[in-house]
Image (cartoon, rainbow, N blue to C red; front, side):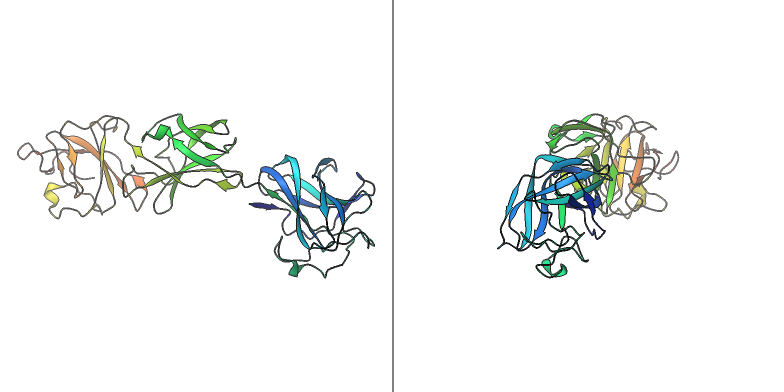
Length: 349
């Protein structure tokens, strides 16, 4: 939940919308979203109460449904708004309390029909212990706040449940509580997160985005496997969905392999300077731009070696940098095909 009007100790302002006037206190919304519930703190108070909301121009936006108070009840009381309020982050509002058409809770000098405790510091809202003594009536303090509905975005299906190829556009996203302006991120272990682009929300349950694996700045993503488990997270209105697993794969038959324990014989594996470590990932392709599949029969192995009968190109995802290296030509020895590369024409990354 998101609490609005938090840590608010300023002097209330008198409004004349009702008779008598209403005392209200200002807050600036810290998040956007629907609001159907407000709360006020009361003790020894009987009657029908409303929470009222004003904009910065002192115009009444809404009042809650009537709530009946009992003099035997002490504590926070819910006041319901129907239809829901639409709260906008960064906007100034005033929240006030109106009781019975005759009295305003918090109005100075009022002893009947009751009184309301007032906020005097600490964490807002909080337990009654930080409020003044029961029965105290204060002229210009309002103990009331609004709470945004906990409408978490939910992701149910991505790309129809299929792997997402690098460079894919208009990737489908199905779920709940999607709103315009929401963001989508793909995450991998070690805190790697890449924001996706061209997010288009077509309804509260459907959206699309363009896959970004290699932004020009910041962290980049590897292809998904048991080492690089990939999740998608949607964020909206200060709330984030639970992560949902997705699979990122190559676009046109390129192959990849995440390295484990490296072959100690560097003559039969791909090496680099500085050399690879377990967790780095290699991608094999058939051209210098990495846009085509490697020659038939090219098979990478987890120890850095490979099977191949023709030259190919390789690049590496360096986990420590969260980034891909440029493409490098690997020349296969005609004397010993499939056993590695032996210098000449480029044999390292």
